[in-house]
Amino acid sequence: MFGFRYFTPTKVVFGKDTEYQVADLIREFGGTKVLIHYGGGSVIRSGLLARVTKVLDDAGIAYVTLGGAVPNPHLTLVYEGIELCRKEGVDFLLAVGGGSAIDSAKAMGYGLANEGDVWDFYDYKRKAKGSVPLGVILTIAATGSEMSDSSVITKEEGLVKRGYSSDYGRPKFAILNPELTMTLPDYQTACGCTDIMMHTMERYFTNGGNMEITDAMAEGLLRTVKEQAKILAKDPNNYEARAEVMWAGSLAHNGLTGCGNDGGDWMTHKLEHELGGLYDVAHGAGLAAIWGSWARYVYQNCLPRFKRFAINVMGVADEGSDEEIALRGIEAVEDFYREIKMPTNLRELGVKATEEDLVLMAHKCAVGVGGEMGSARKLREEDMLEIYRMSR
Ligand code: NZQ
Ligand code: ZN
Image 1: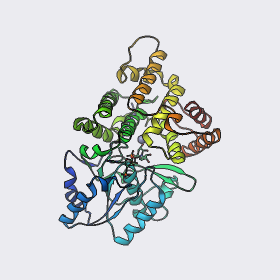
Image 2: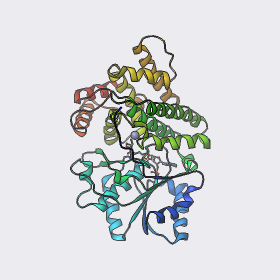
Image 3: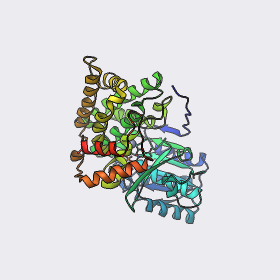
Image 4: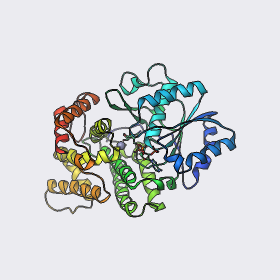
């Protein structure tokens, strides 16, 4: 077990109708002029944006709005938002939407509070020294960005998708109303559940510092999301299931399920980020498409964890060799993905990758991680390429 820092400053307000508390929360954290940032328009169609602006109008809080954050959010919109906020004297950011709107707002926060080009942070050239305070009204349970320190932005030039993590980016508050996720397409709900599980699995499959209390929480979270995802695939308006998944999404990526270990593996995410950058696929679906290949490539180097996962999370019988049990666990995950209509390879993801594409992604991925990365097994460029090939 390793020592750790656990920092989760986000005030969570959870339950039905909680979006009506947004003005009080903005005031509590000192906001006087707000940028409301959202995505492609689902919050307009659902009526949420109109409800939020009415609450701010009634409270006398000034605001401007900026929509347009796309999945795999773009750097140019971040620049646009920074300019708008400077012009309007914005001192508080409110993201209304999913990971894309939240991450885009986080990047604006860094850009506003620091000199120079905000991309420098995503290009690992320097570290942010502050951020503008951010609040969130979440509409999709998935990335955990509502409590996490990370944000992921795509630079259109060269299609470079990069993450930057800083405690300054952690939202001041997160309004979590599970009912807001009921307008999601089934595909996005399933993508979200996959991403939530992956955030915990990335921290679980490690070769360093595992801790029983963390494992127990991680396994409980994984079993819960797996079962609730199956319920939502059949009954999308089930409030209890929506609520379980929403809270799991925040806990899966606020650091809780990684306490005591070596920080996690994270290679499935890194491999997916290249897919997202190049083919613009939904993040959760990209993870599902790559995970099985990653798992088969690395499981022998992390066998005790794969065996434990198979038995404790996927319900595989403790019979046969460790290797057989581990492989049955991987198959069970893929069966689960199929059950919730997630892809298990690139073809099912709808991606027709050429060998040149795979070589390019493996190269960009290796550069992005600084040569090699992974805890279940350290991967270098040639390993990454092999996993992409296996996933075709
Ligand atoms: O853009 P709108 O119109 O809102 O539509 C979105 C989008 O098309 C739609 N949607 C969201 N809530 C909805 C809804 N449609 C109907 N009803 C609702 N209630 O769903 C689609 C996906 O939204 P998006 O915000 O892109 O999804 P997600 O939350 O999965 O975010 C994905 C992005 O976050 C990054 C991903 O790489 C990707 O760029 N990640 C961020 C992380 C973080 N900051 O901690 C960690 C993750 O691992 C991830 O990498
Ligand atoms: Zn993710």
